[in-house]
Length: 502
Image (cartoon, rainbow, N blue to C red; front, side, top):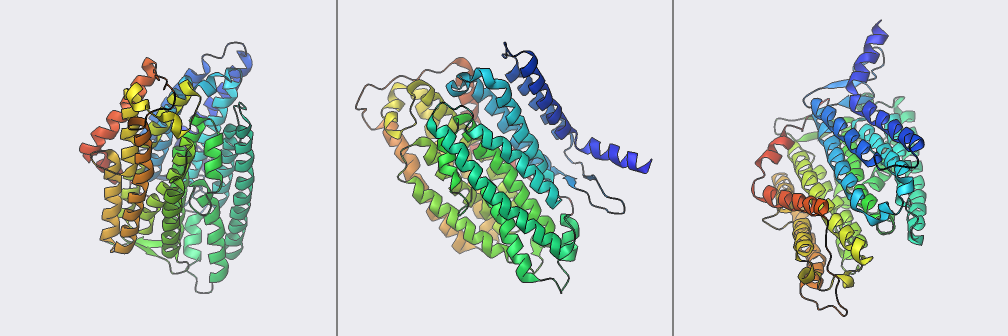
């Protein structure tokens, strides 16, 4: 009777994940049954993700563990407000990607395989949800593999160009290596502690007889696997080629949702496994077994610098945004470097803003590519004059990505710098500020081509359909409104700082 009760409680805590799995099966069955008319599949996917979002929001403020072994107070899945926040980031990103897909020429051309396309997207989302909530090393690995296997296929799904297959192959090879490294690291930690539960490992690694060298090596290997997902240097090599070769919808999805799941996993892994407590000021007190702070500072600075300087000479818009994404991973790591609730707040705010401005930039690039068939920056010459709506919209998204007022990007950067200054990490803040100045150059370069450079040939006027116009307008409005009135976002982020066990 007790086992049945525990199972029922566990299943009640993973209702959103169950809904995702059911919708995935419905998509596959609909694709098989109605193989000649698949026009309803995107709307089934949209309804499924909206229902999932509703049940995720219902978990706000809830605390609990799913799948608790007998006699243990911790389980494999942790349900808390922190997880709800990142799951909502994934849900919102997925909703936008479904709308993007409805207007993408690349996806329209593969309408015969649209059922598989949406089924794979839901496979990714299901993997992300478990990544965000996982508090057991085995579940972490399985959820990463579920997300990865779906994304490998999606990156080369359209098969319209040779580079689609190249992107999928490179993604698979790099992914297999990082996955292997992570699994080796997990096996070492299990060998040291005899457990895969993060909470139990936390208490066991405080044993003075723990082998610190082996533990440090295992931590580096596990970070390699997570660093690959968040596109941080030096685990970023796949990012430019995959972003360029994948369909724009999937590139946008990887740049936001996949990164969000990776960051949620990294934060939960460090906070749960290596922090003993948070003091009255919200500063996390790390267990003195591995110097996470130094590692994260080095990775953050490397990611920012390499991402920004590599983006300077990119002519393909998707490659430029790929290197920009690497740089933003570096900025986001700064919030974790602080090892405090203030730093965590900065990450949550930054991610909310990053979701909007990055999806907006990719949407405009997609709409221009639909009409011109090109992603080259030189084909943007004069576009701001002939297509002012898209030109001005892209300008706003790029200014926000730079972090300039009065856009929401400024608020994200502001809270990161506040967290760094509060932690007296002035040198790191200065390096981040200098990197922001570098990023200004390649974002402004796009504006120069759109508004100041005369086209060598007649530039096409890029018209947009009413749904796409509304979609762009919603994202632009969100960027401008949050740049001025950001109090609700900050309040929402503050209420989501609860990580189970803190």
